[in-house]
Image 1 (cartoon, rainbow, N blue to C red):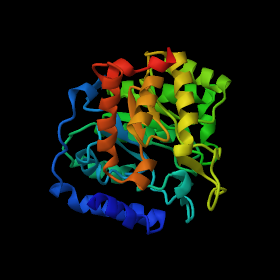
Image 2 (image 1 turned 30 degrees about the horizontal axis):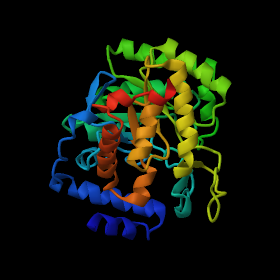
Image 3 (image 1 turned 90 degrees about the vertical axis):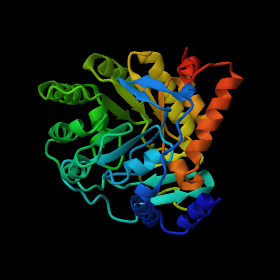
Image 4 (image 1 turned 180 degrees about the vertical axis):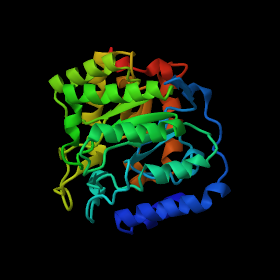
Length: 348
């Protein structure tokens, strides 16, 4: 009840102010928060060479500068991803740049990779004990003359501090960034990062975060490159430039749409990707997850793990506990002994 009241109170603030206030509250209370109860073993997932206590993780975008990963893990998430982090600090796009569309349970953002830069994030993480599964999402600076080099630099600095690195080439809010999803550019980018990983003798898994707006041909090419590159995983998907079933105030704002209206499109991309890569690459399903049923659908479509973020804006921090409880009920309904048995059932 208190969490629900707090969520409603924060929604009275402008979206970006509410986000900043939430981070401050979490930062101040991290040490006071009790550890999350142990998850039911039926939710455990072995993937990327890691043991996830549950498949439910927090997507990048909330904790851009790795300020509160431990508070997030204590709230019940099985893993957390911070970022997007760029080599140099970046202010992002002019405000306002974040818009709630409450009737659609959606958000439009054009943040523009606002973050404190990799050195600030690395300094913060250097003193943090390694606990829980923690990923870092990396990107290129908006004014970079060599974006592939930006990714290489960020990877080299941050990979030793993370359990995995996610490569964000799919944000619609940095002009030209999505062009890195084309075959030639993607081959160059992944080769540079895999070579850098080998040079540093690291084993940090590499994941690629893709857009939901790829057509079938582009998705085929991306799958081919991913399989040939040494990539360990794909995150499907980022926000969309489409406006499915979204009307009213702010619906026409430029930027990427996330939340409930993205669920169907992102899940279809996930299913198509699973059909192309099978179980040779780990898939993380994200986009519109707001319930145990949504998470289960992503898993059945081929996801080993699931990300959420936007739904927290509307549902509050108790959401992750409800999702895990409902996920267990769905497994029992279908006669499955653990969540891994559900992976890809609807993509076969």
